[in-house]
Image (tube, rainbow, N blue to C red):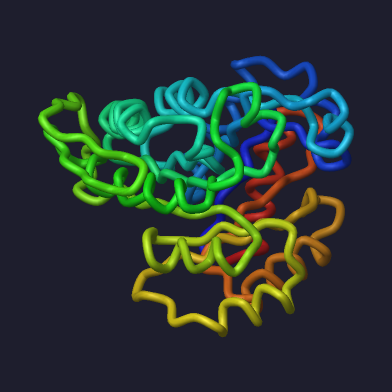
Length: 282
């Protein structure tokens, strides 16, 4: 099972984020990314929310750094670790806008982008952005098909239910011949979308038994990634047994990769914790 990171600082969930993240600087973020890169972690993530209603901030948090800008910054401070959106909300963008942004990032990073996508759930955010909410699932399916047609081509062509384009040049385009797409969500439909249209599934908020049951209900393609999150901050220094049990539980649930959240008191301490976590997982 590969280890990735829910990048600290850039998304701060209540009860999960460490106190040091609130005042962290770009230099702190670069230090963490470089440490993960050097240690051989597989990916860093960044989520997308344009806005969060104040009424939802207590549960969702309200700190969400822009993923395109943030992952571009992280690309410049790393050399091999993959850069994963977790997730881009498909309904907020035209597929060609996503193809241009993340195709550019793929070029800048030397082919290290993983495009995590989802259909979204925060209706107030859809309303603010003027994005349709009720049919977001069907639109998301069409957007993924459009992205598959566009991400790695200079002159993409697509004819779908919601999106149609041809005779347009998108330059630069992704360096990877097939840029991987992982689907976020917590429903059977999200898993179906991932199996049919993507290369991986990155669910959230599901207990291990539910995950096992859902995964057993489908036939997973060869090389398909099941990316499961620890859901809580691991403390491999103070509680190595707890961290080991959490990773074992994800592995037993079917994870091929784990998105880890790590407790720390500073960026420097975070790097030390990454060393310990890697030792536990080996």
